[in-house]
Image (cartoon, rainbow, N blue to C red; front, side, top):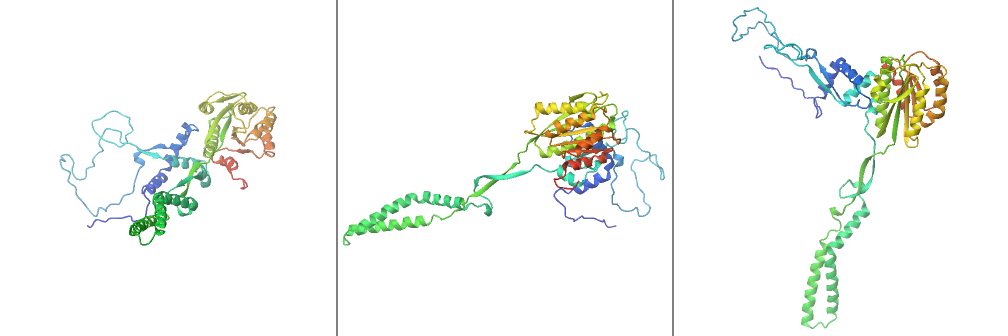
Length: 428
């Protein structure tokens, strides 16, 4: 029977494993998506952008293989067999865990295989994270963009493209080179030419004068030939405009994260809030070299906290939303001058507020907070519209830098994000 061989002659790039890697991710998308979800829950906003190791059980890995059919009955001879006859079934070796789980008692027999560990790159991790949020490919591209650069002139260089050739500087260099190389010869040539003119004025029948004149004219011919060998333009004379790329200098930005932690904000609503804050942070880090994060949690009182306490602290109580806005205004006045900082605010709440406080929130935002902000977004993680939503709706009618949306699950977070980051003039 002839051995069949399959050769794949399709063109591929230098990294020929890209296709296999993409197929592997598609095949085990559920396990990988679950690993990304666990990673997001356990990470902070600042360290979200890194890869992740995904552990997939070996039993879930099955690869298609090509092999020859049995083609009839076959007999195998196992050397050393003393207890089995034809038709017996051989048991699996006992001991061990079979899948390398790392648990169980030690054994002197059996074997197994460890789970397969698959490392997601930073780009793959972010792509799967955005799929969970139902983001379009356009926004993924914008979030993965590299910092912008601009080119500026940086003197001259000796090599480059013809369109960057500086003609005047090149001719000036060629003239200087010719003067430097032929200066001594020209001085000697001028002196000899003056001597030859003087000798020609002497009597023509003087043999001494004629012999000296002949020597001078021979020397003049040698010097002129030497000067003629100096090229008019040499490759070393060429000067090209040099241009270097430098990052576009960007201003500083600060992002205020305000979250309601009253008794009605359960873990699911806090998780939705965290997803929105993550998106906002990822966008701002692509457009600003320096960005500060300020976390403010509030119930009846507001407090500036670190990121861990912002999402995981258990303190709770009633709801007075204006306390968070007042604290944000105080921090802006104390630490972030609006003329030097680009200020962004994001507020997440279930909309429940002390009914006498909502009008105070409207006043604080319209008179003190929004004039200092580039943008302020409010995300309500509950369906019911209460007096806070009504006050904010009136506020959105008169302030273009204020957006408000509801987000009841992860797929609904994007509308606020789209409104916040769409290009000016683009439809909502």
